[in-house]
Length: 236
Image (cartoon, helix red, strand yellow):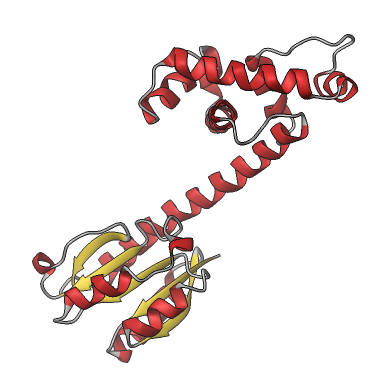
């Protein structure tokens, strides 16, 4: 279950939101409530929070300055994970951590819908991170060097296909194209890097392990497409 942090000087606001969340959801729970940003940053720097609600008072610059003191260890974890609430959203500006700014005059149901939307997004990110970890474990087992960019591309290709098996129809037009656009490369660059990583794996992998993993009778170099399908078959 995801953990929510509420930062609000008005304790009644926090309790009202806490009660509403408790009655209307099972996706996330209120982990902590604090009435000041300084203590809030300390809680965030434990790494135990998934997303945060901050009620901004007149000093919005102080909030933003404090957010910039979040440990670099959690720079990616807390990306787009904070909802700001203020009486005047025009005075606020977005930074790396801000997901959305809401006007405090909005009703609690709108706030809750935005929290739920953010929770769903964070849950998907966590699930994808777990999937990539499993894929990398398989690739590492058969001898892929996880520091190679081609291995990274291959891992992401497998992840994409796992979530949408329609992508298997034409790798060039589907996953290779998606990865190429993501990293601003051309498709040939993606394919060449994956092939290079696969060649290195083949020459460094133990022959018996290779035959057993791919069900080969004799030792031969697997094509990336076979690697993708074989890893996919071992994920479920």
